[in-house]
Image (cartoon, rainbow, N blue to C red; front, side, top):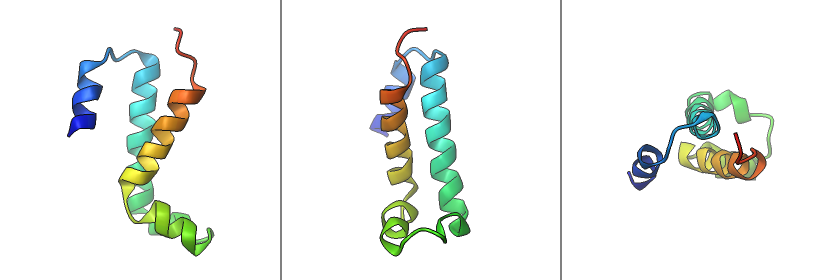
Length: 71
């Protein structure tokens, strides 16, 4: 819930929308498609396949670092 409050409180420019949208889509998508992680090692499936929050957090942090902060 705290994360959603942060999303709502920030200005939703193109960068922020991309980060939130891709993180949510990948988190939900991978959680719903169990076969997506079938080719990865068991430890990877355990870490990223058990909860959509983990993959969404990793993607959000990575995109926040990689995407330029200027418009």
